[in-house]
Image (cartoon, rainbow, N blue to C red; front, side, top):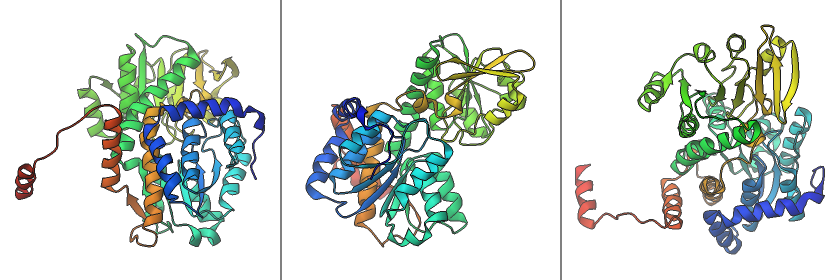
Length: 413
């Protein structure tokens, strides 16, 4: 059974998925392989990832491998209804639509868990959290799961420290073929895709404030620089702050940067990164966006409480007038700007990330019951295999060590 609002959108969704397939060589290769080997035959997979075309193709690849798929979104505004409808038409179980309420969102999470999944593919940790709080009786059926994001891994590590994590989870985000490309190049491009298409404003010559200089922040700052912006980075980590300075960016506390910024992008995974003190000193027309997983990095409750007036300034942009007269503009309600105001990461980038996801799920099945730890890294040979295949698809070759060189390196250890 599937729950979506309108299944008559499927033709548009099918076209989107077909476009992704044309540009995802790794996933296409895995689809062909899985359709023959059926590594997930007889297994139920519960998946909560931003439900757009790249995710949909991952779901079809897993289904080709024999999996019975139960799918929902991981953000109320990132689900694309036409894509969800296309998956329903293809026979997959979908519980998602764009613009769900918090109650509907949680109901959909419950719907994919109550079937008793064997594998969980999570983006942000909501599936794993609810499994451990509401479906404890089904935990023995879970072989393990995969986590896509930095935020989700932070939640998993907190659970693991407390001894609360009851089944093994693969830290997909920590794989080099994920975070080095998805987080940096994917986030870097897709954030500005979302901002540019939503605002239709020039970036060149303006101040862009990037909160957080992890891999995602590096990508956002790099692309802002490429668009001609003057970039300011805010950080709590002195090492990352030095990196930002040496990469050519200014560094200062948020409350100082708030006075200068024209565009703001938060990518920290933390709460209230931009708060009431910062709103109060911002320019009239400052544009706030979030690219962290949860919609708490910009203190929207605080902004609404301060505002004396609010109105829609443009589609997907809400304006809030402060008592001092300036308007603060927020894209996509402070939710993930690259998905709630765009199509997410480019297909070629997600090809690598989702290939890691699919192969990590396969690894869990093949090694069921053999894990001593609850948090598992993606095997290095899987990471390297994905990288070599991607390099081949890019038409590039690299050197190979000779036996003599291998012996030299071994002797040096």
